[in-house]
Structures are given as structure tokens and as C-alpha cells.
Amino acid sequence: MKRIPAPPIALRRLVTVAALALLAAIATTARVEAQMVAVMVNGEPVTNYDIEQRSKLIQLSTNKSPSRQQVLDDLIDEKLKIQLLRRYNIPDIDKDVENALSNMSRRMRATPKQFTEQLARSGVMPETLKSRIKAEIVWSQVIRGRFQSSFQFSDKDILARLQSSKPEGAETTGFDYTLRPILFVVPRGSPPAEFEARRKEAEAFRTRFQSCEQSISYARALPYVAVRPPVVKSSSELPPSLREVLEKTELGRLTAPEVTQQGIEVYALCAKKQSTADNAPAKKQVRDEMFKEVFERHSKQYLKELRSQAMIEHR
Image (cartoon, rainbow, N blue to C red):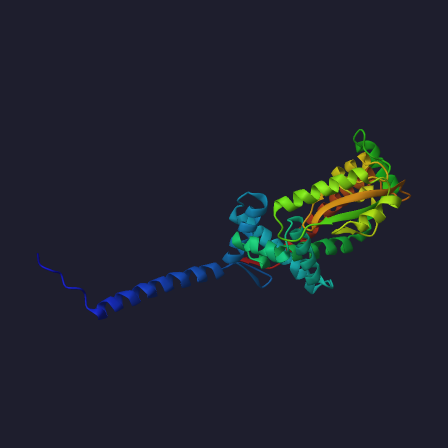
């Protein structure tokens, strides 16, 4: 059988160089397409990359795949909102964005770094989320400032709405709770068994806890237990689930242990009194509903006005 000679080295090198050049051209084309401008909003571009990033963020947060037009409209509105910084002086906006991101991370039981790393693994860059947060902070402050008088609700208006829409059994009396957080510390990185052991210690301590006056000093003497300063929380500030827990907790006793990033935490209910402020949960709920309705109405009208005045050029 006749042996086929190998191609010359120079030819193999030529083929390799050509293949590499083709791959580089494909990658360059992809980058160029990603940076292609989809629309100009008052001279500022929205690129295909922006659309791709926002699509991933929406899909991640809602588990729904938005249409390209929906995403594009969302990004146009975002540009218009952020551009209001040229017209209105809003100090410390970047600091507010970082604080909002930290709060989101805390709700996810993660540090800001861990949270942004999770986003990156899902293909979403932190700047995409920060831009959205910035737009909403700017928009909220502008709407509330521009239409400030519309958000002044009288007691008469609140009570009228409350009487017409109050669900049966709604809480119309507010309370102020004085709480002492007590933390059974668990070192960072400890295995689940350590959390379980500390939870049992907290549960045992809960059965012995008789009053804040007598038992707080005892709690301070326990090893690896931190007793934090008292905090006063209004019932209107608390979520319904926590209000229900405090309603079922006897005065001078502890709530059930909860797992936190730092360890196992319980709360001593040291005082409970009817609030003198107008902050009953039902009233706050009505006030929040009225605020939301007014905000959405002005938001829709003002955004329509901004769009009519803007130079929006689709490419």
C-alpha cells in the first residue's frame, strides 16, 4: 500500500494560522455585534450587550423570559430616569446603590461579594443590577419630590379608606415592643451539627428564662453568648409572621430560636405597650396602599412626558 506523504511543515503552519485567524475573526464579530447600538436615548446608547444582560437579570429574578421589545423599553425608561441626575441634585446616589445592594445580599444570607459572584455565575454583571437600582432610587426621589403635596394623606382620608376596605379582624391598634436580642454565637464555617447543638442550648435556656430583670444578667454569664442592647419595634414595622410570634410570646419570655449567619438568636420580650403614634398595622397598610396608587399614577404620567420629550433613535 502506497504511503501518503505528510504535508509539508510550512503548509501545516499555514493551515493552523488560518484556523486561528478564523476563530479570532468570529470572536471579534461576536464582540462587535454585542456592542452594536440598538437605540440612542438622548445621545446615550443602549447596546445589544445591555439587552442581553438585562434579559438575563429579568429571567433570573422572575423565572420568565421577556421579549426583546420589553427589555428594550425597560432600558429606555432606565436611561431616562438616570438622565434626571443632570436636572436634579441627588447626593450620595452611589452610596445609596451600594447600601441597597448590601441589603439585597443580606436577604440572600450572603456578603455583597458572594452575592455578586452568584450573579456573575448566572451571566449577570454587577453593573447591570447596580444600574437598575440607581434608576429606581433616582426615580423614587424625583417622583416624591416633584409631586410632594400629592403624598400628604389626612387622617380622615385614611380612616375613610380603612372603613371601606378593612378586612375583618384587621389590627387597628398598634403596639410598641421592647426586645432584647440574645445570640448564641456559632463560629463562621462551623458544620450543621454545631448549629444544632447551639439551638438545643438556646431552647434549654428559653425554658429557664423567667423575666428580663432576672435572666438577662444570667445570659451574659453564659459562654459565647452575646446580649445586645434593647430595641423598640412598632407592630406596624414588623411583618405579619413576626407580629404573630410576638403576640403568642408571654411578656418576659423568649421567642423560639432562629438560625442566623452568626449563630442561633432568640428575642426576649421585655415590654409591650399600646402605641401612642398612629402606626396601627391596618392604618399603615392603608397608607402604603394610597402612597403606591399615587406614586404609580404620577410615575406613569411623568414617564410618558419624558418619553415624548426625549430623542429616541432606533438603529
